[in-house]
Length: 116
Image (tube, rainbow, N blue to C red; front, side):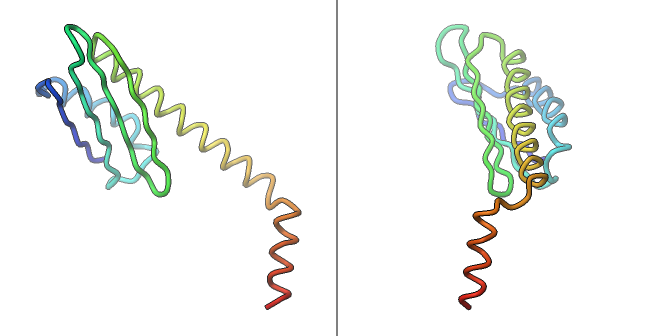
């Protein structure tokens, strides 16, 4: 997974970069290697930061944001939020696959094929 870090009113240090890369590796098992993860660090006020993460994969966009005092804690929370979204998508896809095509959709498909 490729990483794109941006800092608004804050400098993205090597420590932030290394820690973020380490934590993003946890998500790389869900995505292809050429997937880009955008992370934006924003200084809000004294001691307050905001971290935004966006991952675009196929036709789905995973978004998470966290307002925190500690950037390291905020990154951990973001990773948890993104993992939750991935698990939810996976379980919904699995449910759809197990249930198959609903009958009304199947009938509409047959009607369209018969018309042709």
